[in-house]
Amino acid sequence: MTRGRKCLLVAAALAVGITGTVAVGVPGWTPAASAATASSTFPLADPDTLLAKDGSYVTYGTTVGAGVGSRCGGTGKLYVPYLNHGSGDTVGMSNCAAGDALPSGPGSWAEPGGAVWAPGVALFNGNFYMYYAATKKGTGQKCIGLATSGGAKSPFTNKGEWACPGGGRWALDPNPFVAGGKLYVAYRDDAITSGAETGISIVRVAATGFADWATRRDALKSTDIGWDSIRISGTTHVVENPSVFRASGDGHYYLTYSGNNWDSPRYSTGLADCGTSPIPPSRCKPLKDGVNQPYFGYTGSAGLSPFRGLPGNNQGPGAMDVFFTAGNRRCVVWAWWDPGTGRRYPRIGQLKRDSGGFYVQ
Image (cartoon, rainbow, N blue to C red; front, top):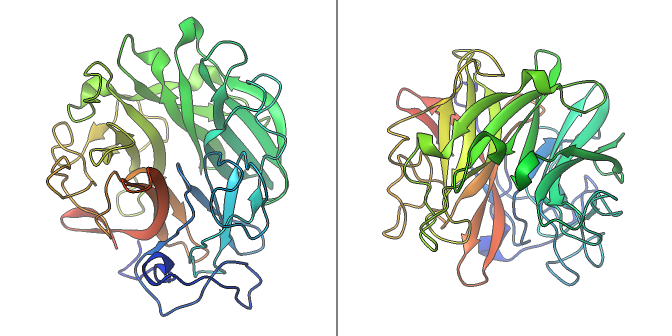
């Protein structure tokens, strides 16, 4: 349990327009009084944060083009841009890309020069495993690849295609997590649905980084909720960007996931209870009337009346990833949508829990 302690986070430089370098040697990271959240001016979609071996934090995200965002180490097109920030138990945030974690691109199985979406990284048995989405060469199908590295900021080496369902169904938004000394991956898996529906699966991973497909189980389907419909077409129902964490208080595993249009105020975050096993024996149960409303979201008139808002009350909060600090504090990183720029920006806060449920501070 967090016992009410706060993540020691840098105040939002977005609000005051400050950038700089600190003594801990992490460029672009600005110290300030302890605050509840930290935000970045770097346009980073689908963020995923972890603690590196050197005690700093790394936040990865979707491909950005040359000239996009401020740089403090990365140049040109960045396939997997990453921000480097914080130290020890102080998470912080950065306003500049420190480099490209996958400079060779998505690998020979994918469209040459194509984008990488929603990379998820986990430290397991001393190595870092990156799972990411890309377009399969010559098909237009979104599939998942695997890359590994000995360091969180070292260039990752592609290991090949990891998941690519039959029939052209999509697999994307992979998020690895470690539980009970084993590695698992939660991901958007449209192979468990049909037509305009989407789904989320969880599977255990072998030491090679590749899946033991016999362990795969359904975690959620878009048919389980009713707030996920994309209004633009009226035909697509989206659940995606999963992240799994275990709550120490009850020992249950919980699933965060996104739904609706990513580029709208309606994009929101759901929360579901998956029971006491990292691979749920049955589909996870959405919390707090989660069938009809998102758990976290924009509380303005254009939103979907979520159970709870988030710090900043920005539009379109989604792609929420749960991670733990050096002091075992449970934090989250998510991206919000700016209608002025059309881009998404990362924000970090602490995920807490009281008698009313989970909330972010």
